[in-house]
Image 1 (tube, rainbow, N blue to C red):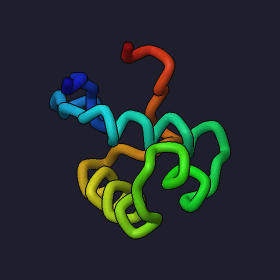
Image 2: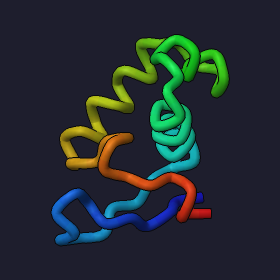
Image 3: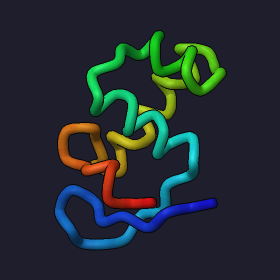
Image 4: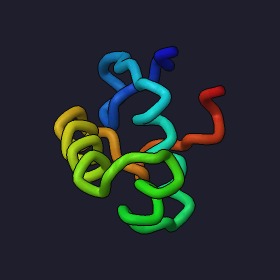
Length: 70
């Protein structure tokens, strides 16, 4: 399932997959890339890729409140 969220500038709505949302949630809770990867069952390379893709969309754990989107 995808969840709509505004980007950092609030200009448009982006859609996040469950995996993207979980990455944001765990990183915003202070988990490391490797800990996040273990929690969602992927490699740390995959988490890095997800983070990079989110950053290109101006979405980071620091500007996104994960608790309000479920």
